[in-house]
Amino acid sequence: MADYKALYQEVILDHNKKPRNYGTLEHPSHQAEGHNPLCGDHLSVALQLDGDTVDQIAFHGESCAICKASASMMTAAVKGKTREQAQTLTQEFLAMVTGKLNLNEPNQIGRLAVFAGVRDLPTRVKCAILPWHTLQAAFNSLGTASTEA
Amino acid sequence: MNARSPEMTHAVPVPVPVYVPVSVPVSDFDVERVRADFPILQTVLEGKPLVYLDNAASSQMPQPVIERLVLYQATEHANIHRAVHTLSERATAAYEAARVKLQRFVNAPDVREVVFTSGTTEAINLVMHGYGRKFIQTGDEVILTTLEHHSNIVPWQMLAEETGAILRVLPINDAGELCLDQFEPLFNARTKLVGVSHVSNALGSINPVKQMIALAHERGVPVLVDGAQAAPHMPVDVQDLDCDFYVFSGHKLCGPTGIGVLYGKAALLEKMQPFKGGGDMILSVSFEKTVYNTIPYKFEAGTPPIAAAIGLGAAVDYLSAIGMDTIARHEQALLQYATVQLHDLPGLRLIGTAENKAAVLSFTLDGIHPHDVGTLLNQEGIAVRTGHHCAQPVMTRFNVPATTRASFAFYNSMAEVDALIAGIRSVQKVFA
Image (cartoon, rainbow over all chains, first blue to last red; front, side, top):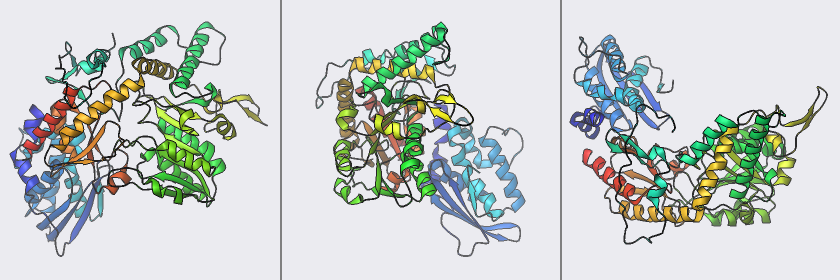
């Protein structure tokens, strides 16, 4: 079926099994916790900014495959990017998984397009976006992010 | 026939092979005949027949109940207990007839002891406000259990916060059974109430409530039994249990949402204060003094969900015609068959292995989050619940954030157990 093939594909399953940048940073300059109270998922995102650029990033936590793969690919995507670039990417990702992004127009999504199928699973959108909300909370040093905020 | 939602295709009933497992006693119960009564069970989701295994969350409605609701709306509807006109008389008669049906369903001695509520949650809140706030004071104690649904925890926490009462919790063992030997030591002179589920919604454990009620009564402590997961699956006799309060929901019992029942012993209900104020719960009102109505009306302020109550009456008629004993037997056969099959799946951990269990199977799969299991099973047409099941203390006890829960009803077939097992195998294959 469409969703099945679109979502649980190799790249997502691979990032779930072998998440990139998984763990903690010794001296993070920014950090935040993310929670999805509906399912109990939680994750932590830590950043080491060099000026305005993401020098190092790490995440860890307890979550479903969609959330973990999203977090893993997010860390890979924003590493080396400026805060502003990461912000743009976050907005595009949120737009994509809620069906508001036209993938045929120029965008920064790249490999993250594997999450496009989430838009057909309304109950799973929150799983995919939790890492991105947590990233933004870390930038703003809010401390915590929630899918129910 | 009833309106159909556009995204669901109702095809000709899908012939499901009748599976007769060798290890299970064959009963004369004809599940296919029963399934034909449920229009929604004919649903085909993107080419796959619906396998509905989320009955602990909400059950489906058979045609006779749907027809009863239509009949009411088409020929009987008006407000009840008010006007002298014909429709109001019809509606009142049907509503009160439903109360009698519910009285018989749980074998309550007196029809005045059956209070219609919006559901189990409201019924427990009613007892908290009506009984708890009147009789439970600072330093008094309420005994609950680890197995309780949030709806039998949070109201008592609100009471504790308001009054300074103390909550005591009876723990469970590794099988998900209440540690009965630790029950008596929880009592002291300040114990004012026990709240216990008849059947655990998260694990299916059937609790020894009759025994617990007897122990509590020896100490003069009343007991509220949350029967939301028991009433749909086994015969319930409140006189035999001797419980003081018994609460359950209509929508888990093949009835509509928005209706439930509080059974309470008349002497207790009479002592309690009303939960909600308004019309129908009064005998007379002046700005100087209001006189409350008698039970059960004292607790039914405002216009109740009349259609839903009548629908629930039809639902218990339907279930009684099949027989709650027959239902329990068929569901036990499903449980036995499914449990054996699940045991054979590598990487599957069954959470809740009580000796005395209802047909609920909560499990985790190694390395696969329940939400992914739920999404992938849904692709196969299989509806299960994933998450903490509004029973986070149970999840904490077993050190899991969430489980996948398959919960059965009498209209589920052995073939649907096979579909679940095949579905789990395909989920494991995706994550292999």
